[in-house]
Length: 241
Image (cartoon, rainbow, N blue to C red):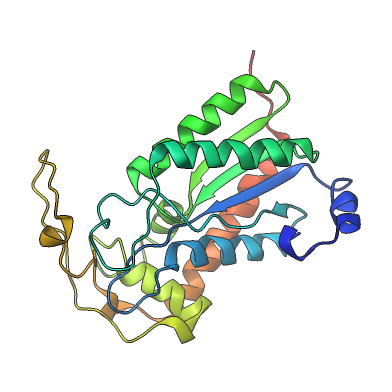
């Protein structure tokens, strides 16, 4: 049940089927020379649409902004701070709670550690404040890496590399513009730097040249199946006292 496509009558009817909602978080962030800035958002939102085809669950509108630290100097990246993300997350969850939702899955296509920590902090706060709320935090990209591990040819593949390029070739191939060269960031361990692009010139972590549409379809199907199983377990989950 895609919330943006529903009428208020359909929304009310949906509450009779489920009280679970998935809230997709993405980013507007560079993804090399070949992938769109909306890559993280596209991946998580499209996969959740596939989940919604298999079981009754609300899919909230995606959040297109995230905490983007390592890519903040690259052209096109539009980031928000952790405080903003936490506040935005709280507002969205509390509004959906007022509408009758009780089981919340915050799922992010953007995998930045600072970004994920902000979602985790917001989720923990909300869980303490609402006794009848269930909360889950998922990094959808990390889940994609896990389920596709045996099929990926690039050993240290990550941002805008083989996995993400493959998924975009399947989900929205018209937005993929060729391929960027294989690249890996060269940050110095422990040391913070101002000009992050100087240590990660093209914004690619992996080898986009190894990508294919068939791989992307397989990865998306595997993630969808994992998420369908998780939603069912999540809805039946009872916390220990």
